[in-house]
Image: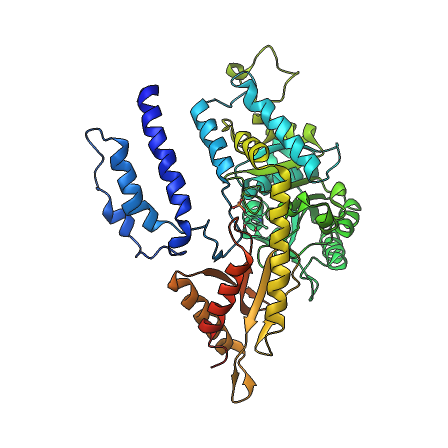
Length: 478
Ligand SMILES: Cc1ncc(COP(=O)(O)O)c(C=O)c1O
């Protein structure tokens, strides 16, 4: 494809994207297709000739869009918001169009230096001190794994330079809670800790945040048993109920044993753009690494996970590779992002964040986050005041409202397996309808529904519509 052909096809594609985004609200939230439908609609053998953009746009309309979950739909309340601000889409396109190669500073100086600047802007915007330096990873899963690998190496004085974990006298232990994201245990397993050495520390029964006394007890027990505590993965804004671990207290416990603390704020990091929310991660200056995803609530299109550490030197020692073919005259005076994480080659991910911040503006992003916080408080009030059958089952810390509907059968509230079946049934009814989408989760052994507010286009009237739909699906008032 020549640049001129690209110009023509590209204009058509931009028009297609703009039309598609305009029409999102008219579509079902959940894709109304059977498994395998997309695959069957495509030829099973590769194309032999050439095709124009028109054929591809037709397939987008006929095959891809019907098979797409409308994450940008204002009636989407599932999982966590995965906003894809169009300003950031432009940045992503610019990044692809530039075709930069991020394997060293020399291979694309602007890729490195825009990333340095944008990470530092984000540091300032979230109130972190100058002691932090950041990089952009693809996902929080990668960021957590990165934090754990550095933690492992600090605990073992760089065991990777000798026999690695296989030469250790004491097993290394990681601490998290049952509210931690599944990526935390996965990272611990990938980093070689093993299930036997992952502790799920007790949480507070009301807030679901990690209990620092229980953490201290778990660490003491491991030390007494001849094991070595290596890392705590704390969470600001857990996936199920947006629980906030008490960072300041965790940091004190961890420091007593030289334990690395990584803070997973994948979702809630966006809230730190609001000064009034920063108390939720009080103590953050004492952790060793922290990550969060602008690609969630803030809305810089996937994939964009910020990773900050206060110990860049150690991070670089753990991650450094310096083959002859990557060496250049500028080594020593420039940042080599390949030494900040797992991959060698990196995309120009900073571009979409750069576009997002500059085109939409920080104030507009903050206003939207505040709107969502207010909507969550309003919705939680509606549920809490709706009578005894509805309840809000966890504190509403940010934009997620966790609810349960407990119908009365002969005057007795449904419970146990029957309540679980009821909850899963009404959530499925809603989701299959295509009108809206919620995700369920298990809290204290019982299913509940999460209303996760924060899609860019979700306004109060969408929540009013959701509440009506929830009542209809749960049979409230029958
Ligand atoms: C608290 C938390 N941590 C980590 C993740 C994983 O994020 P990613 O998909 O970027 O790996 C999520 C995803 O929702 C999350 O909520």
